[in-house]
Image (cartoon, rainbow, N blue to C red; front, top):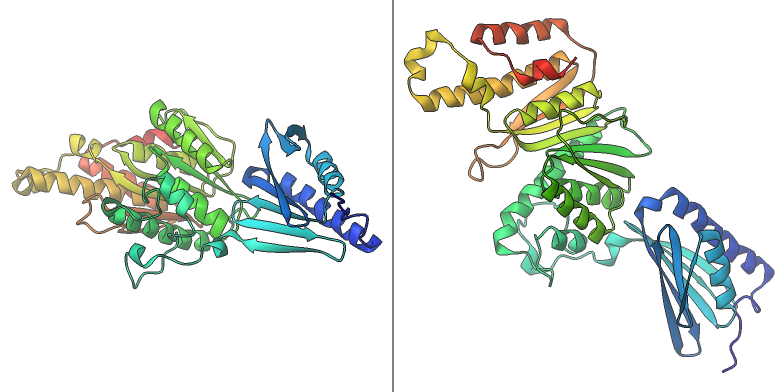
Length: 395
C-alpha cells in the first residue's frame, strides 16, 4: 500500500505547529507526572486505523510499533511518534491524565489541539442511580465510576449497590463539607494541596477527596495516609495502584511516632478510636496544619479519670456519666484547638440514625496561640481531675 506521510505533505508552519504541541506535552508530563495515565496514538492509512497504547514502565514510556515494544524518555518518544507517522495519512494523539485529555490531530491540511474535561465524557447519571433527587452531588455516578467501583459503591456494571446507598451519601456529604473548608483556608498551598489522613483505615475518604480535588476542582494534591495496621495500608496501596492514583503515600506507623517535613494544608481523622483522635489533632497542631477535621470516636480516657462529686446524684446512672464524658472530651478538644489559634465549629456530620458518633470538629488556623483560652482548658481539667493525651503530645 502506498502511504502518504503526514509530515511530507504538511506546510512548514504546520510542521512547526505539530512540534510546538508535542513540545508542550513534553513540559506537561514533567509537571504532572503523578497524574499521567496513558497516551493513545491512532495512525490512519486509508480506511485502516492502527492504535498504540503508551504507558509508563520504570519511568520510561513503552511504545509498541509493528509488534515490537521499545522504551523511551518523553523527548525521544516524540521523535519516535513523528518518525512512525511518516508512514500514514494522519495521526491522532490522546494524552490522558487524571481529569483532562489533550487531543492532537494532524494530516496534510492542518494540525489542531483541544482539551477535553474527562468528566464531560460521561456527563449523565443513569435514572436508576439517582439517590436524592434534590441533592447536588459532588462525586457523581457516571463521572466517578472508576473510583466508585474500586471502593465498592458501584457494581461492575456501574449500578449503585443497595447496601451502599447510605454510604455513598455519607461520602459525598463529607466532600461537600471539605469543599467549604478548602474555600475557607485563606493561605492554602496554591501549587499542591497536602492532606494528611490519620488512622486512615481503608482510605476511602482520601480516595474520594483525591478524585474531587484533582478531577473536579482541577487542583494538584498530595495525600499522606497513616495507619498502624499493615493490612489496611497494603490494601490501600493496591487500590491506589488500580486507580493510578500516584499522588498518595501510605505509611504504616503509629501517629505518635510519625514525623513529617511536609507543610500540611488539611489534617483529617475520622473515627480514630479514643486517644488516636488526640494524636491526630496533636500532629496537626505541631505541624501548623491550616485546617484540622476530626470525627471523634470511643471517648474512654476522660471517662476513666474524671470525678465531680457535685453531680454524683446524676452520675449514678452510668449512661449519663458516659455521655457527659463524651461531651467534655470533645468540648476540651475544641477549647484546646481554639487556644492554639484555630477557629472551631462543631456540627453533626451525618444523621444520628446512621451512627451516634456523628460529631465533626472543624478547625481552621487563623491566629496565634491564646494563653487565656489554654489556661481555661487547664482549669477545667483540674476541676475534673483529668490529664488528657493532648497535653502530652503538643510541645
